[in-house]
Amino acid sequence: MTNLFGLFLSTFRRNERDVVNLYNTFSRLMQITAEGNMLNFGYWHDRTQNPLQAQYSLSNMMGDFASLHMASTLIDIGSGYSSPALQWNSRYKLLEIVCININFEQLKIAISISSKSSTIQKMNQSIISNPINNLRISNMFHLNATSTVLPIKSNSVDRVIAFESAQHFKPLNQFIKESNRVLKDKGLLVIAMPVITNSSNMISLPLFVKLGILSITWASEHYELEYIKSSVESNRFKIKDIKFIGSNVYQPLARYYIKNREKLKERICREYSQFLETILYKSLLKMNDASKRGIIDYILLKAEKI
Ligand SMILES: C[S@@+](CC[C@H](N)C(=O)[O-])C[C@H]1O[C@@H](n2cnc3c(N)ncnc32)[C@H](O)[C@@H]1O
Image 1 (cartoon, rainbow, N blue to C red):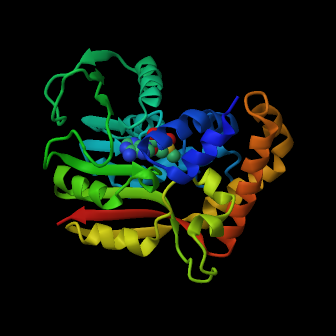
Image 2 (image 1 turned 90 degrees about the horizontal axis):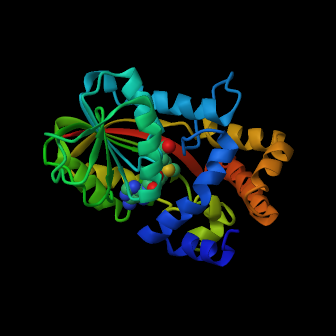
C-alpha cells in the first residue's frame, strides 16, 4: 500500500530521489488509466477515444515537430518506458537513439519492452561518452543518468528531446546548457511540457497553495513560460516555434476521466487506496479548471543551436 506521508513529502520536497520515488509509486497508476506504457498526458483530437490514442498522437506530433525525418541521432531525456522512442524508431530512419532516464527501474522495464521487438547487441562506437556497461538494443541505447550531466559527447547529436520530463529538471538552466553542448550546430532542442502561463491573476500565495491539489498530480517544478524562454535564449539557442496545446491536453483528459470514473476507479482500487483515487480525481478537476482559466498550458517548444 502507498506510504501517503512519504508521498506528500516527496511532492513538496522534489529532489531527484523524490522524483524517482514518485514515479515508482505513480507510473503504474498512469499505466492503469491509459492501458499502455506511455507516461504523458496525450493530445486529444475530435475523434480520439481514449488516453492511449491521445498519447500516441502526442508522440507522433513530437516526431513531426522535431523534424525527425531529417535527423539521424537523437537523445530522449526522461524517456519513461521508451515507448515514444520505440514509436519514433519505427517511423523514422534514425541511426541512433539514446534513452536517458534517472529512474533505473523504468529503464529495466524499457529494455525488456524494447528487446521484445529487437535483438540486443554489445555496444560499439557511439555518441555516448563512456560506453562501459551499457547495452545496445539494435540502434537504441538506455542510460541511467540525469538531465543536468549528460554522458554524451559534445557536438554529437541532431536532436535533444525532453518529452514531458523537463518539468522535473533542476536546475532547468543546467539541462539547457548541457543540451547546447551535446547538440551539433543547428541541432534542435525540442521540449514538451506543462507550464504556468499566468499566475498574475492569482492572489499572492506560494504557488503550491494556489495550485492546491493539482500539486499532487503535477508533482514537479512549476516553471513559468517566460522563465523557460529566457533560459533557452540565454544558452545560445534561437527559439523557432512554440505551440500552445493545453486545451487539447488537460480538458479532454479530465472529461474522459469524469465520464469513465466508475470503471477506472474499480481498476485503480485493485492496486491503490480509494483515498488516492479521490485525490487523483480532485486533482484532475483542479487541472481542468486551471486550464480553462488560462493559468496552465502545455507547450511544444523548438529551439535551434546557434
Ligand atoms: C512524465 S514521464 C515521461 C516519460 C516519457 N517521455 C513518455 O512520454 O512516456 C517523465 C520522465 O522523466 C524522468 N525524469 C525525471 N527527472 C529526470 C532527470 N532529472 N533526468 C532524467 N530523467 C528524469 C522520469 O523518470 C520519467 O521517466
